[in-house]
Length: 472
Image 1 (tube, rainbow, N blue to C red):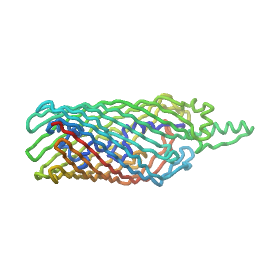
Image 2: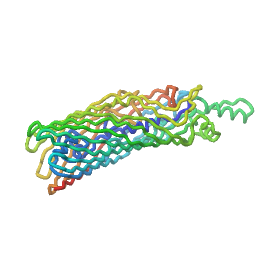
Image 3: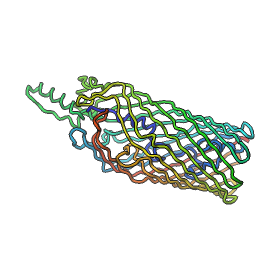
Image 4: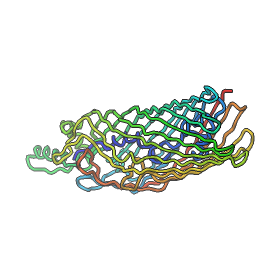
């Protein structure tokens, strides 16, 4: 079974896949506002500035002026992996290479929001933000290379919104989401998974020697592909906000799914000595592995429903809460489709790689608060539990060693001359230790991996900086 690309699946998948997996559960980036980050994203009902576009666009009706808000979240992930092991599909021999390491790819995510008070009852807004992001790369000789070796994802959403104040208590909002995703990945393949390279090498050696010679190409028949692709997808957002009285406010926000068909190219290259010989002889091209071909995969980023509240406990103290449900179960299967059909061994052919992560629906619960320490300075804090959609070690992806996490956040807001507002925030994300236990390929699609295992110890730190200007 000659393989190539589970990786592209993962790649585009990764437009589903979160990044280095340390920001938020599943493949969400985790935070799109520094003001919200300071409360562990519990403050959606606050509608403090134009960044409410992401969390609840009906909140635009609560802001007192037109404004612009510029945010930057800087993520410092830490993924330690150890006790790695992997087997070759055909022989069961250990895959050689590095068995431990650390992934620390810093990611910077900018977000920009603007709001315009068209009238006392209507507010228009525009948000440009990062809903998903990824940067994960193993050593090229990692023993997990037949699974996924490198994954990078950049996703930008552009969302115009409108908020309408129905009366003094109720407001509604809606937005149209245009989401652009660009991804890249690298995956190594064992081209001798079916024994085809060993058979070819044995034939060549036998002809040269004039007698039967058996050659085992195990560990010397790797090839790899670099895959890149992109796509636009579209969705919508609906929101409602209700001021129950002067102290209490609740809100509901729904973000729709966004469907993508990521299209791009897969560039193949031989690495091992026997793989290079087979490549030069055209044996790989005859099996469907060419220097360049088209590839695509369909993914659906999930819908979510949030219910949030705010309570003015005192003139200086606000309390916040948020519960968000996400339909991560949409990511239960993904198929990477190649332009060329591949010979995968034992007389079988396939034009696709299939993965079945079988994710579950999840929830996130966050609570937080703010305290007006002085007229210009407000202090903020929050804590959140964020459930992982991964059911267990067998369904976990090595580029997404996701686990349940807890957010601990602190923040501060400083208002200068009423027009200039500065926010800073820091979050530490504790992630449960996880394990990765992959079964060998089923032998019926383009995949050559054997069994693999690894342990992960993960956490992340996020620093946020925000500047908002209010037009008076």
